Length: 73
Image (cartoon, rainbow, N blue to C red):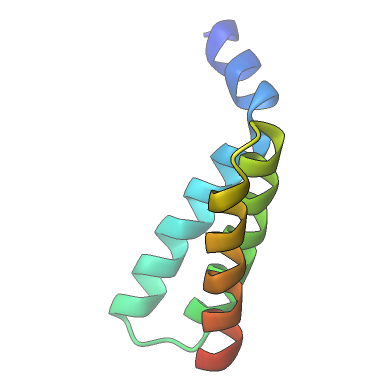
């Protein structure tokens, strides 16, 4: 169990990005306007995670998702 907590602690941006992505899907299914906030937060967290592991094209894709979230909101 401590290994799981250490892994989550070491990859906190990825973990929170997944959590907010799930929240986005749930709000989107319910057609709640809060889904756009969850999408923006998830994209920002994923952008930091991809930047940490040096994936620049994924960072640009997350910028597109942030723009989509702002436009949808």
